[in-house]
Image (tube, rainbow, N blue to C red; front, side):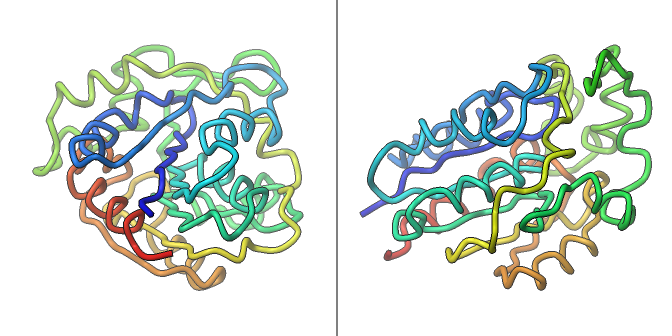
Length: 244
């Protein structure tokens, strides 16, 4: 039975960031959804962020959970909440990888090399734990630096469309201990973007070894859903169609 693919977006983004991948999957008849998380709501932690993903996964049937960037923390927590027999795979795409019981903020302070310096250059702080990008140009040269120049991507037009959809981000999630008590007993695939300028590729390789994940390396930067949607969709479709 083919699994449903549920795609979890990263910080400052919406479910629409996955639209090119959803379109590719749907063309092949693969069911896919990318819910919006209430990530711009002050005080939003794991439970609130997990709720739309759990709703998209439904009550039965096999599912593939794919989390991009900050969405890796949410997707992993959802994988731990669902019946392991339902989760065909957890796919982490250029993702932050949680440590059961530990706040990711503590990990970032202790292991700053997990992130590539400069990815948040120009971001502004709002009230409480909110940050936001002041304008499209700042986001394009900070968070999306180098993406427009990727040969496999859609150039400046693709980046402009992506940054136009950004929104504020609340960071309560990072301050909360991860709700997992142990790593989910499900197949885990780590998709490492070899030119990632947000999440350090070497750090991602170490994280994959820590959790026992299969490793798939993609060329290009942090946003393969923008620059390599066909390749990423093909990978997800193969995982979803695998016997299970």
